[in-house]
Length: 74
Image (cartoon, rainbow, N blue to C red; front, top):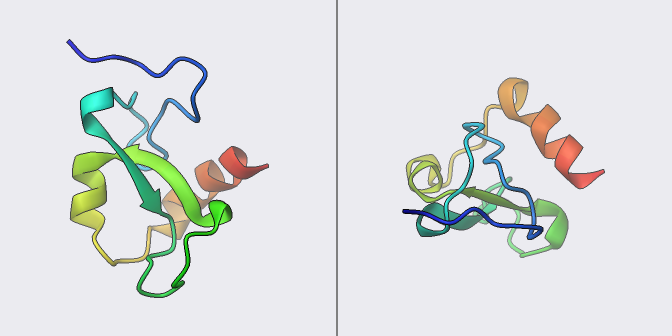
């Protein structure tokens, strides 16, 4: 059984739209650290750990993910 975060950051992965359980939680660079070499808060999001691994150093799909990223940051 996993745990949902209560009041800690966002609860849904902006990439896959599913609740992030504690065992699948990762802090992710929206724009890869390889391209923006710092850990500024504007570039960090909560993400599903397996999606984060598969994304690797690739850019996110902006057409699909930017609106969710923007909504999280405003």
